[in-house]
Image (tube, rainbow over all chains, first blue to last red; front, top):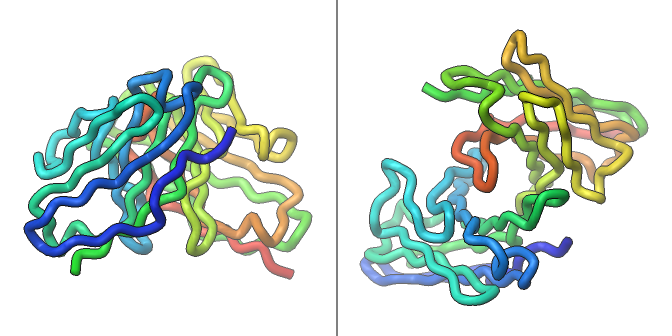
Length: 111
Length: 116
């Protein structure tokens, strides 16, 4: 099982929008609507930002949104804020026996 | 409130084993899978496996098959992850996380350092 493919880094200015892609295969992202996204600050545990492709947990700003097309999922952050600067990881369910696969992570820099 | 509290940092020699605990509170322990995810220094998240606290059934990723054992003690709502035959590249922060297809709560992480 291979890791999902994410860009190593993205950047944007405050107020702009950025999109982070997450490419998998027809065995994971393409086959299940169970893509989730996590935000991680240095030295901290990851935090769930999006689950089931596009749902937001309580307390997550609506500036964060998720979508999926075919084997590629995307996280869009609109109205960028300085506090959004962090690492972001996608994750997909991949079946009963090896149910979880993560992306390699994307470092978001707010310019 | 839901909390996952992990045991403290460990330093181990190559070839040894380490056992990390994760105590759950604020929810019905047997109602959610417990997963273990590790992160090597400067690297990404790596899923190791999961345990169903209700049945005790486990799934491990192929990379760790034969070296990892996940168990639980339902009487104290605690999950355990034991990794054997440690190598230097097992140095990482190990996290427990609650969930099924996603992880809504995470432990604070346990740093395991493998060094001679």
